[in-house]
Image: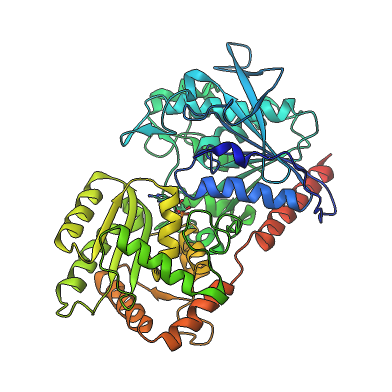
Length: 515
Ligand code: ADP
């Protein structure tokens, strides 16, 4: 894919904010340059939405080995970024900065440090994490802080995302308390399951003084080093990506060992629902699909479905519902419960016009790959499993499926169901976190419901929801309004970007009051 076309030079003129804030948004992933999941999408779309409201948002991210700054037409900054390692006075890494623009008016800086990022893979390769991740992301966190310090304007907010930037609040507050007196530090949890934990003996990678190697600081109960914990302790405010998940992570069951800390900071923890970038994820403008469509031209969706079926060896049957799944293949995603559920539903079918077809696009743990491969082999006319990460294919599955299944055990926000609704692809989801916040069940509310929700993550409950959805699909008189209702929902960033903005402003006011 030619990524250079994502770099633009136009400035946004659509300013609506009363006060123009300067925000450094630090993220280890930014779509379409680097992405393993929802974080990448959000790290591009939220800054663009904030910029559209008139703010000066600057993205800071690593230049990974697969990114060629020349092909991306980035410009090299004259001055390199000096990043102290180990401690303030000791060794420094001289990192090159490359600059581009994303969308309309968002500056994006890539930090180029060969020893940490000049390799294939973001966090690891072939399923194994890189051994020096503690060092790589301590570097990235420190680099984000140094970048914010050296930025020519006063930075109002340093917005950190997930454990990869977990040490940034610690560095900012420990080394530069005075310099950052007018800068608020915000930490967003995109997924609490990933905390950046390392053996305690890797503590030196942080470069921090020994007092941080303590259970009240960066170590967790089992003596492991925990980067996210540091961020959550030292950030001024914490957000996560849906209101439902904000509540869940304060419980022992879903707090992944950090519930007590999050409870203690509950006054400073807010859940703000992620938004969608409808310039990328909308069937009327989607460049990856063969036939673009909207509410008025739903026939286009049928053509996308027929093509998806045909090209992937499924019988082309318009009347059979096609269920799509687009997912990382990990325990979180509930695929282990989905496989036996699908097997028992499909095993009982006698007529090939009954039931449904299933298309799974996913990449992840090998045991789940094996389960899905076996399922596809058992039901070659019913089930397709495409192993791998394929952005264009994700769009085609959204457009070509009738139903999108998201059986996650837990889901901080979930973007695939938000996107699917825009494509008229009706979601079937487990009632958890952001899935519960975004999908309402047709049975509970026949006039406003937008999908099918199952309360428990069990084979029976999931099968029940799939059967209800498949049956509903067969009645087009009722299905069509459901599709249209889902397509007309608005999950664009507007309201959520406004909530981030209000949070930024309230933090800036707090800083001023403290002066
Ligand atoms: P998570 O961040 O936990 O992976 P989300 O639903 O928030 O889950 O975001 C998933 C994002 O990753 C979506 O943009 C989805 O389209 C994309 N995605 C997931 N798996 C794949 C895959 N195998 N190929 C292409 N895109 C994928």
